[in-house]
Image (cartoon, rainbow, N blue to C red; front, side, top):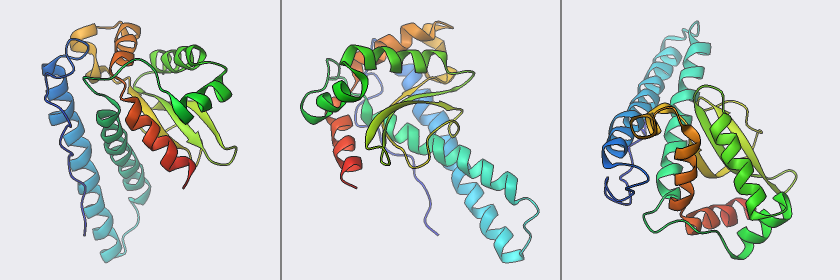
Length: 200
């Protein structure tokens, strides 16, 4: 059975300083993301065992655990590629046009995603996603890793709002951390995700 693997970062742990310290990035990637990968793989094994023994009494809990860990793995994998030490500024081309069309302006989009990330209750994410039924960009709040999203949406840009992503550096001032994330956004990666999702 194929399993999930922790991806390598496309930059060194210290590369995103001063916005994100190397210590936080190393803990975030090497401990937290790794735990979601292990959790997803362990849960797949338990699901296979349940099928083999035809014992489905714990299926609901296993499905929820898989969704939690797998979503954590997927979102973190996108997050690392969404960031770059050479990031920041704003997008151009088709992505910029789509943001203007669906949010009115880049500034309005930026404010909505910042607010969604800063105000997500408890732990979660702010997400720019492609919604294929309406053919539009939307901003979503993701509670934990897998709640409050439109079915079928594809995440393009994700901002991690779990405390492990920022607390050592920004304490409880999540908006300051979110503001710094904008200086790291790898718009080439976001634009490539937008094109792929739109053409899927």
